[in-house]
Length: 549
Image (cartoon, rainbow, N blue to C red; front, side, top):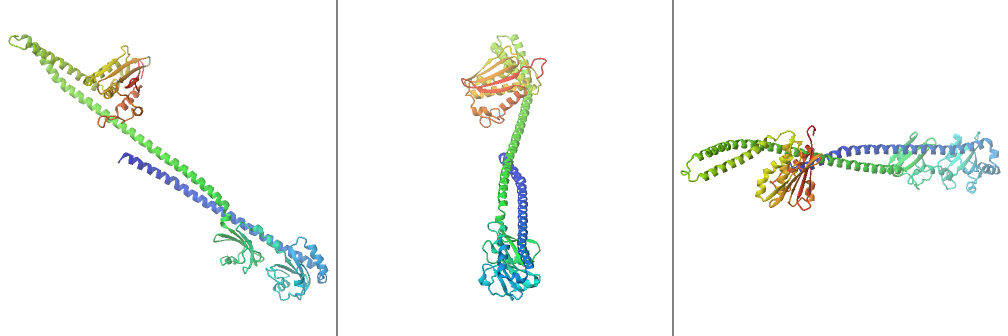
């Protein structure tokens, strides 16, 4: 699988997992919280409206009872002879009605004839007889009566309260002040679109609707079913709180629009949703960032592991090359030794030959000398190969940096000469030895010299300088090549980074140099020269005898 697709798929998978395991629980908790919040708000509003219904019931019942008590007191104090006197009734009405709770007073005998009246409808009630009125009969039977709203002789909707005297010789009736009676329900309006009213068992309004309704609709008539205490009903977009009063004859109704009463909840819900949404965005942003961070770290870890694996392959390859070089050197040394022996034997035999018999004796002797020279040169090369292969896993020892450089330069001198490249050595002859890993350091030298050869290409110069102070040895490699661009310089020590053509470099050389110098306790730096070319500077700690590195 393509690595880029793999990491992209992994990133999407982790992000989806974070989405599921953070978003879903958050949404579930939020939904449960808002649901419970709504239920609590509804319960609170329902309790408040029930308490309002009970309060208005108590207020209305108390108001009616006050009127009954007042009339009963007056009927008990004055007999029919006094109460039937018009002048006496006028004075009595004026004295007991300072607050204007009642509109008028009637004195009616047991035969239903009105004996006296005081109020604004004097002309309408003169000579009236009520013996056939239902309220009159009920009042004489029960001793008191509170009527439903009816029109009567005045053709105006009104409610009357009537009581008899203890001997039931006459009846005292008062008409309730409708404005004051209706005002008792104004406080029960819980919202702008709400309503509060009283209806009788037949659904007829006993108080005017605050919203101007004149009758109950079909659905609202289901509220007329008798129940004890206070009840709450939800019909469409309205909530109804009802309570029967006046011994089940009247029904107090408090009507509220749910959207109005839930306004405070809606505001708090919206605020909560905003907070939840912001929290979700923050959590998801953190989750996405964390996923990207984790995948990036995993990618870096995989890349480092790949680098290590590649370096191990390189090490194995170098070890294999070392073993191969050792084998080749051994194989070459045996015939070289034989050639040397034979050349020496020929050289010893030639002086014994007759010069006259051998016309080309001088050329033979010169050829033997050249054979021995080139065999010696080949032997030196195989000796270096054997020495390099034997030191592939050597431990730290005291190393002469100058000698190591000379040996390393000798590996590339022929190639440099072939390309007309001059290698200059400016070595400090008083350079001290230091405790280090020679083969590892030689590998750094060889990598840097090969890079210099590649950079110069032909007809150029490579310089190798050494110097030291009290704490370190400095080795500088410079060339006359084109130098290094700032973009390349930022990545030059990264694994697998190369500017060479495909197949001509692995991109590990400079990374290996960097790692080796770091393991040896030193550093490697690169910069461009003032007159062109690149300069690599190695710093190697100076470890003397008796010190530990």
